[in-house]
Amino acid sequence: MSHPSAPSLAALLAPHGVLRVAINLGNPVLAGLDAAGEPSGISADLSRKLAAQLGLGIAWRVFKKADESVHCVRADEADMGFFAIDPVRGEGLHFSPPYVQIEGAYMVRSDSPLQSNDEVDQANNRVTVGAGSAYDLFLTRHLKNAPIVRAPSSPAVVDVFMAQQLEVAAGVKQQLEADAQRLPGVRLLPGRFMVIHQAMGMPAQRSETARQFLNGFVEEAKQSGWVAEAFVRHQIQGAAVAPPGYPAHD
Image 1 (spheres, rainbow, N blue to C red):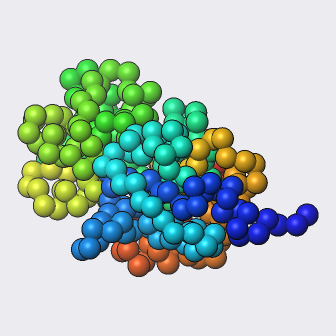
Image 2 (cartoon, rainbow, N blue to C red):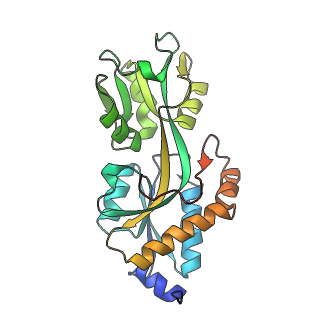
Image 3 (tube, one colour):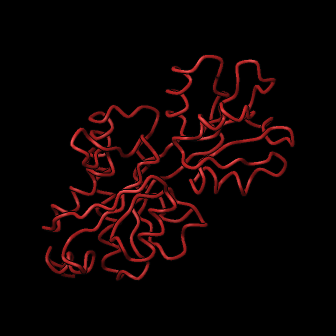
């Protein structure tokens, strides 16, 4: 079987002649903006690596929230995005195998009676989470008793938690750990309540050849050590390189 050339692959993955990439700034583990206002972080680096392989330039679509980024790619207003794999998001998207695993954790006040994750789901514990984030989708399915208070975005979770005197904040473990270091009187519950598998995603209507290429691109980035090197380069703590061959849909 002959492999498609870079130009023909580029046409399949990016039919508009430029790689349109949706970047979500809501998860600081994966993406941010540099001093010049350009996207940076492992998501941006993966985008640049892919664009170089295809011989294409990049047109960035930058969002503050994950669900905005999902809608952009689902509507084919971007060719590529970076998403936590979640059943709710699967419709209209093709996910690659994941490249990163990220832990979700709970934060409480130091004087909270809560000591473990399995104590959280009680009617008197209001849990705040970033609206539309993977943590929101997960907790919406799994919390039966605790009311959910949705913050405007994931980075705003701790501010809402403090301002509204809520019982629990939920989100990216590293983000909460950083918040706990700058804020007095809070602590993280031990362990994690979920693991998120972060993947690349493209509009579902892209061809099978395009899907297979993207899957192979992500696997190669993991197996070659490129993802691990990106963790070091961006000083990412607490995330793990996803294991090889992990299924694209869990």
